[in-house]
Length: 291
Image 1 (spheres, rainbow, N blue to C red):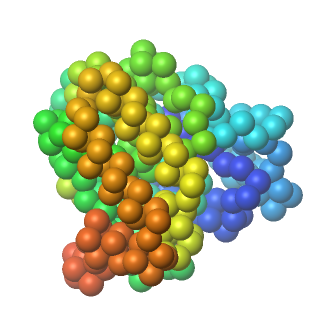
Image 2: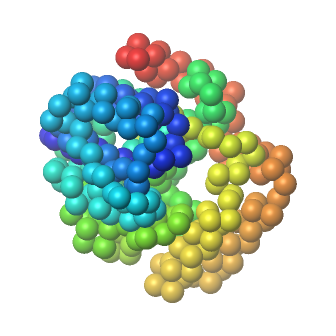
């Protein structure tokens, strides 16, 4: 079964991270035949060099889409998905690292369940090295659990998701939002009763660039979250109590000092690193052997 990979990148990305993200998808045990990389605005010379090197090394597989100016992640992904040649699309961030068997595991699930539309999994968060994980974000696995969870929180780890292109286009694709475009998309898919699942496996090493959860609690992220929660309330997906609880919690975290944000994310919302180290050795060894 063929699948496409969809990634967007912009000028502020680190070239080393970009290179690692690309290589992790090209080193999948089941390789893609269509890797769409949307260049959201003019890239730096260093980023452009990374892209050109992979274009030369993998002719016919990597398909760049060049945008003359930066239009934001949501809008860039919306353009990118129309360039994807396959029905199944694996979303990937430009600074994260997929484990080698990620796509193979997901493809097996799509083959086994024809009604499956969106499939994600767990992430291991790290800063400098995948051998030193910080935490793990777990998500509900079954469709009913995802539907309940989505009323207050993001039910998928965005960088792990594989979905059917036709379903995403049916609900209007990604919206042009500063933040929260993925969460907004999933709400619209769930409103249309598309069947969604997560697998209880670590699929991606997610890079945390800033200390104290700053990236996840920035003003833009906060506004995007509130906007999506308001949309869910207006459409009847969630109720007023869901809206109040979710927004109150997000506001409290947003206003908290950095050290408290870090504690909340790493000790309360996500699983601490020491609890996953013993379970992660095999995946880590597999990844390192393919680098």
